Image 1 (cartoon, rainbow, N blue to C red):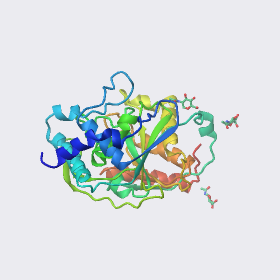
Image 2 (image 1 turned 45 degrees about the vertical axis):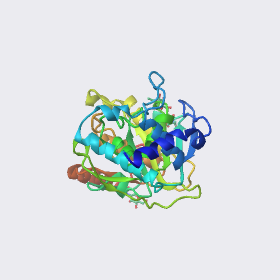
Image 3 (image 1 turned 135 degrees about the vertical axis):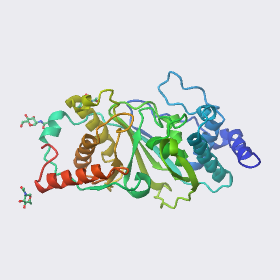
Image 4 (image 1 turned 30 degrees about the vertical axis):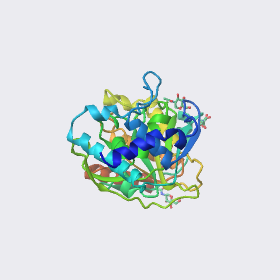
Length: 334
Ligand SMILES: *[C@@H]1O[C@H](CO)[C@@H](O)[C@H](O)[C@H]1NC(C)=O
Ligand SMILES: *[C@@H]1O[C@H](CO)[C@@H](O)[C@H](O)[C@H]1NC(C)=O
Ligand SMILES: *[C@@H]1O[C@H](CO)[C@@H](O)[C@H](O)[C@H]1NC(C)=O
């Protein structure tokens, strides 16, 4: 109340000097990028904290105002707030990042058809499987998958506290994407470059807890962005899990992951760090999701690092199946 809050209020009162132009939005069906300084992002987030933005109701944008934070009382929720306060404490002490962030909406105009996939002779790429570790920690230098909601951030500003929400709360600059990004369509993804991690944590969902302040030392690129690339792809939710084996729905997930893993501006094709994409509340089948992502990554020329979050049986069976496929020189099409 004596330092952090007044500092946040100053940021809001100085908004017009920090963000001197209207904020460009990333609308549906249009590939585009928005870059801003981390300082500008902190100003937008301070505004979100004080709920100064107009409501997004009915405009196909996620909510950016933080009021959802203040109305739910749960231990995991106060830990989320702790992460946010920790971020602003760094901002106010001028110990937050002073680099640049880039948000890129990538639209795949012409996804490969089902015949293209069936005919593909691309070899399967390497896949490393591990039952231990976290994408954000162990996927350093890789293209890190955000198991996204089509409304970016999912329940980050409400009670949600799973993969995407935890990522956004420990790297609060990612929350700016809620302000910029109109709801993702099936052939679209969002790539976030340059965000920093500010807090470390323990647990997951209801057991999520703030651990401590974290200083991110990831090197910066020539644009002064942290060399950290997050790709937000939203899996389909299945009411009846058997539905996901339908060819059209498999194609939808191929379109989406291919869009996410497709070569962007960078010429180095980093491996994809991913895992059980859409396999929680969305009821995706982990084996099928692993194969779909392996096909997309292979078609894009990327290796894959697959983390099963403690599921040792899945790790073993995926490793075994991958070895078998490679030993028999199976192609993506086969
Ligand atoms: C996926 O891509 C194919 C091929 O372009 C297209 O026919 C299909 O409609 C797409 N599916 C979805 C759900 O976007
Ligand atoms: C796939 O192969 C079939 C049969 O060889 C061919 O008719 C079709 O044009 C091919 N499709 C694509 C998209 O390459
Ligand atoms: C797979 O390809 C390698 C190299 O081209 C070859 O030596 C091997 O015999 C092939 N294995 C099978 C099962 O076809």
